[in-house]
Amino acid sequence: MLIIPAIDLKDGLCVRLRQGRMDDSTIFSDDPVAVAGGWYEKGARRLHIVDLNGAFAGELVNAEIISKITAAYPDFPVQIGGGIRNLESIDFYFSVGVSYVIIGTAALTNPEFVKEACLKFPGKIIVGIDAKDGMVATNGWVDVSDVTAVSLAETFSDSGAAAIVYTDISRDGMMEGPNLIATQNLAKRSPIPIIASGGISNLADVVAVKEISDTCTGGGVLGLITGRAIYEDRLDLTAAQAICDA
Image 1 (tube, rainbow, N blue to C red):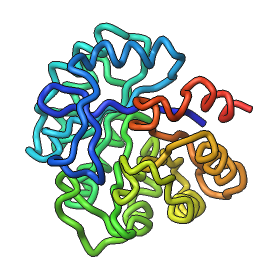
Image 2: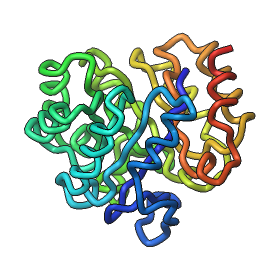
Image 3: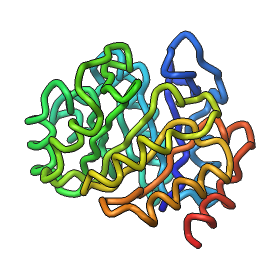
């Protein structure tokens, strides 16, 4: 299981939001490339980047910064989401060295596009499922649908997706711990590995999610995304990865 540090980009800055609210953000750095380098030096094995402006705009906005990160650290696998709505955007990201592309909003609004992308880029597409009270939210978490996270995940069970990033919006950035019940339910029912996001705040949370992964019969939990906890030194990335490797 991987501990995956997150970089959320808003107006070129490295920020963290609370429950996905753009008007409730904390700026952690004005140099996202240096932040990426810091996580790389601490031994992170993958980096999670979200183009927040892109998620709201429905197009790539912070692509230049992402390109600088992949150029500076070509051996650091990057997964990127936010505003990816067409194959051209996916082609661009792979051309600049991104390892995995996350498709979120389009997973709900255009599932055939996701399946097409999985066929064209095998093993490189991650489905992003963001949920509020168990229901899928899209367009930067502004719009909440009547589709459950589990049912959407089942739509892509045989698509060839590399993973599903599951984010519990109510926990994101709140330092209150992950939604273990929802994460376990999804991990048991989905044959696709889950990357859990939202609420990871300490080593106990890491242990709890690892126990889910070790006991579930589905695809299991491939990784944990963490943001505010490592930025505020509440979670030691190296120690957390050691727990996952044990």
